[in-house]
Image 1 (cartoon, rainbow, N blue to C red):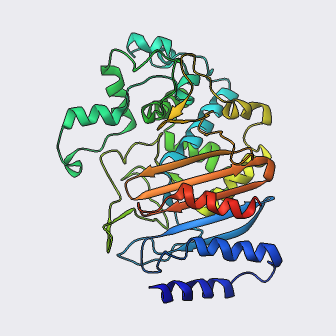
Image 2: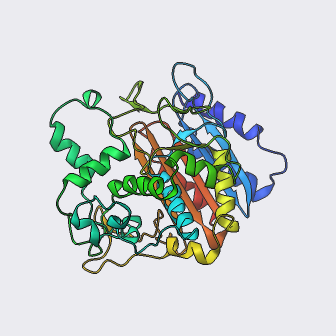
Amino acid sequence: MKRTRCAALLVFMLALPQFLFGADRDRAAQTAALFASILPSTPGAAVEVIRNGKIVFQHGYGVTDLRTNSKIDEQTNFRLASLTKQFTAMAIMLLAHDGRLRYDESLTEVFPEFPGYGKNITFREILNHTSGLLDYEDLMAKQYGNTPDDQIPQISDAGVLALMEKASTTQFPPGSKWQYSNSGYCVLALVIEKVSGKSYTDFLHERIFAPLQMTNSVAYVKGKNEIPNRAYGHTGDGTTFRETDQSSTSATLGDGGVYTSLADLAKWDAALAAHTLLSEAEMRPALTQVHPSASPAQENGHSVSYGFGWFLEPYHGHERMWHYGETIGFRTSIQRFPKDHLTVIVLCNRADLSAIDLALKTADLYLK
């Protein structure tokens, strides 16, 4: 096992581009070492480091699935899970740019049929997770009880909205607390559709992916579009892996349905740096920390800062905008350090890797 890993690392080091010298070459080798435990025949990961607008490290490890054993590379498309939220937020912001909606507009102004409690929920609160909307996964758990997940029908964004419309209240008064809400971003996908008159998939393609030439990126809807160069999710049992690519919540779009690759995410990162889609002033609300009125924002007992689709906590004194994604068989993370002109992206198609830890360990090498 160790001999195989060492051999793989040696092959990688020999393949390092010759234009990398000194510290850059050392960092590339150290980055490769972080992923050396991923065997070539197992599900794995893709990692990318962008510094000063240039890709200084980009590599795939392992395979997309255990049926074809296709190698993971920069063109492999992973399900982003919650990294999707930055695209949903951008779509809402583009509609605000167009004058089609306002951040402080209420939910019932777009969905008049929504229960009365929606009058007190604004799009700003949904974007920054202070809406108090009930968690759709909790509602599904109550509805289906101990039914095995593979026997539960997949829920869509429209199904999530229906669950919210059956409710009579929120978990807390909107704006008073912070609580991460997948429900909110599913609802935002439907807001995009209602306001734009286009499907969520088409709107993202026309306003984000196509303009940025993110040619392989897609908000996936089974039976309506395909995912080129697709990675499938896997779960390990300690000795082997089994494909665990879909669950009852894998069909929602706004909270986690985008598939994309390292190659396309490099274009996304460049667009964020250059303010290609929105001006710096228009982007500012996404990077402004929310301040709930009743209590500080916390997740799992830790203080957090959040804007629109981005966590905003600094890291060892470095300004940072970041996000993570976790869904059945996938783990993802993007870590952007704007003032350091550094971005690290890690996409995994196996559940036993921590994309966040791997991304931050990689960032540590380049923030020195």
